[in-house]
Amino acid sequence: MSGAALYIKKDLKITDVQLEVLMGILNFYSLIGSFAAGRTSDWIGRRFTVVVAAAFFFSGALLMGLAGDYATLMLGRLVAGVGVGYGLMIAPVYTAEVSPASARGFLTSFSEVFINIGILLGYVSNYAFARLPLHLGWRVMLGIGAAPSVLLALMVFGMPESPRWLVMKGRLADARAVLERIAETPEEAAERLADIKAAAGIPDDVDGDVVAVSKRRSGEEKQVWKELILSPTPTVRRILLATLGLQFFQQASGVDSVVLYSPRVFQSAGITDDDQLLATTCAVGVTKTVIVLLAAILLDRVGRRPLMLASSGGMAVSLVGLATGLTVVGRHPDAKVPWAVGLCVTSTLAFVSFFSIGLGPMTAVYTSEIFPLRVRALGYAVGVACNRVTSGVVSMTFLSLSSAITIGGSFFLYAGIVTLSWVFFFTCLPETRGRTLEEMGELFGTTTTDAGTEAEDAARHETDSCSSRLLG
Image (cartoon, rainbow, N blue to C red; front, side, top):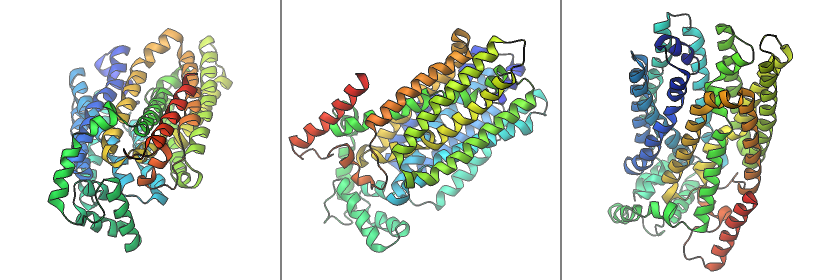
């Protein structure tokens, strides 16, 4: 959409307000998909939920590519947005549930890796199709997105189902078969199955009683909302706080303003030629993709916290640099200020680099691994909802905000928010590297309801301490 927006505005003769609504509304549409995906994935399984996501992606891209007016384009964004909600929720959850603890960070970060590859391919297609006639170019840029979704739907049939979902449904024999395929040894498979059964509340001596276990589980599923939102334990409350804070700060950092509006940002920096704008935007995509690949390698070696803190600190400094350069250029509209233009480009590349080394991939990795099994799908959906609402607000207000406080002032504001995020990450996010999904409760407090008041009080003290340090 970043490159296509330049031509959509010219072709359909829409205003800046209509454009920013078109750009940002997808995030609110994705709320439908994220909550539906939580329910769908618990109902039909993680694997086939990916097929549902692919169907929405395909239909949305096709509608946008064939759109003849603004209303049809908005309809295409609605369908694509539902697909985005499905995809953002199911990909990390599925990956986390089939991955061993030693490589979970690396494998779960693949969702962010391929999001960045998709963004890069979008930038490249913008550059490639920009020379087509005005009425055709942007439609091809958007419609070509239907092709990868077909491949995705077909590849799903070669994937195993999540063993944790199978256990949750009482299909123990199927879960054992999957674990034996993805574990290195039969002993490891048996150990992981025992851990999953314990986390799911299934006695160790229950083996293969599919009907009885499934009935019991279906009755308990009605309590998931209560356990997560209405009356969570101190442990779950702390996990939810960590999730919402992480998801909020990822998008409140202004990353969508950089990704979606990078041509507009570079225009403000003094780069006015369309080819130069799209080429510079491609450089942003290449940088994000290369750095996120590095992050995937470092996640299980360095750990989550060090990368998160380095990421947010570097982003804050980069945003100050970008805001300074844009402010200088804005105050000299009739003169070229080469050093300020260079500072804007360098700061933008530095910002996306720091984002991609930590906060970008870490949000999906961390959120997908800290929730207990019973509330994992819904918990991740709630996190995605927070992420999409924040992203929608940021992307739908950027042009208006820039008009009100200048584009440089907008990025100074984002820099302040990112500085607050560093404090939150330092205060409230424990290290999860090397832990199995079933061990996460130890980091946030016990997840059992009968472990005694001492453990509950300790977990509650940690939650209250975290909150007070943030507010104080």
